[in-house]
Structure formats: structure tokens, C-alpha cells
Length: 109
Image 1 (cartoon, rainbow, N blue to C red):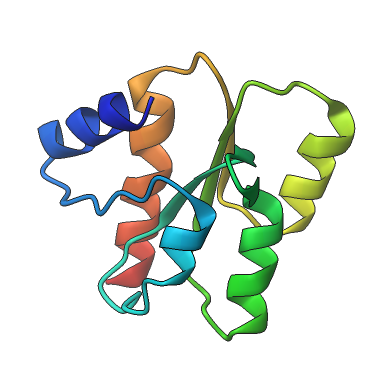
Image 2: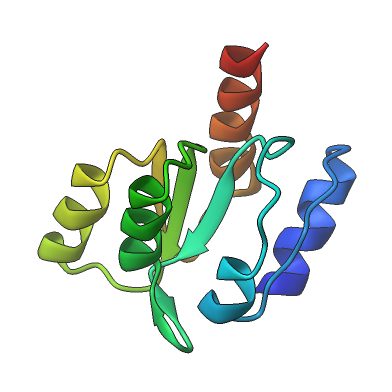
């Protein structure tokens, strides 16, 4: 999935920075250029939702898009309550990922 998202974003002229785990992501400190963060709900070493809460607690207000294979309504509610800009259930269309990124970019300008 990570590779497919990377290719899709590059096709749309975005420069993704990819992380294979929550720990690798939290080691990254430069969010100033980030249009948004795309988080899987179920990371190998944690929860994307918990990671979002840590970002907020650290004062990082970058927009978040969640992707998941989990259709649990409680998970969806928790994600939406964390102020994400999109919640996508796998499989999802390329456009359903690109549209919120374009919107976040437009709001940033």
C-alpha cells in the first residue's frame, strides 16, 4: 500500500516522505512543508489515531487523512473526532485521496 500511495502522489506532482512505522514518523520533525499527513489507522507499532493525538499535543496542526481496512463504526467515529480531513476505507479511489490533499493545499495558500 505504501508503494502504491507513493506512486500515486508522485503522479500528481507531490513529493511524499514515507515512513514504515509510527516510531519512524515520530522521529521526523519537519512538518512545515507538509501539505498533509496520510496515516493508516492500524500501524505496525501503534494506532494512526493515537499518532494524530500526539501530533496535536506537540502543537503540530498538519491536516490528516486516514486510510484503513477497518470498517468499524467506532473507529470511524474516533478518526472523525480527531479532526481528520478525510477517512478512506480500503480499497479507495485515487481521486478520493487526491481531492482532500488538493483542498488542504488550497487552504494552506
